[in-house]
Image (cartoon, rainbow, N blue to C red; front, side, top):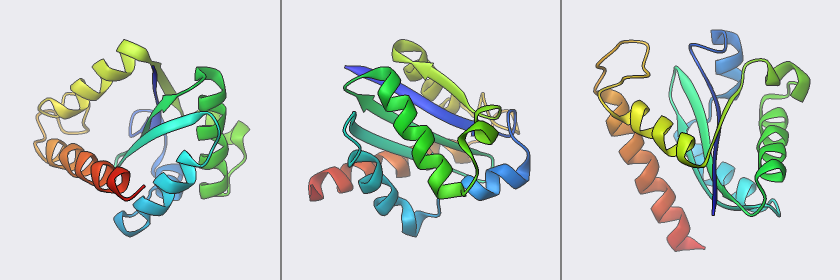
Length: 136
């Protein structure tokens, strides 16, 4: 199992880029369905807030999965992949899981340290991902 996260945040991208990449909740199921339609992506969870967009996947092949996420982000934002890459971060395997734990734990990776709202957003992401999986 290859766990990958590709994302951007207030630390890596200006607000103009974050706005173009934001995925509102009503569009979340469609975005997840689109991502799992790629051949190298088996599972998806998306965390989209005002200060971050993170796409977590289980990939059949890590490099191809990352390319497919970047392709999705370029299509969604209508920005070229090369323009996006400078703003993206990527974590693989245990580092991806550790990153999620930092994000969820008292907002350790938030704009405001200790922000509790992010944990609720992570829970909502899990709930949405679980309901989408049940539909497939």
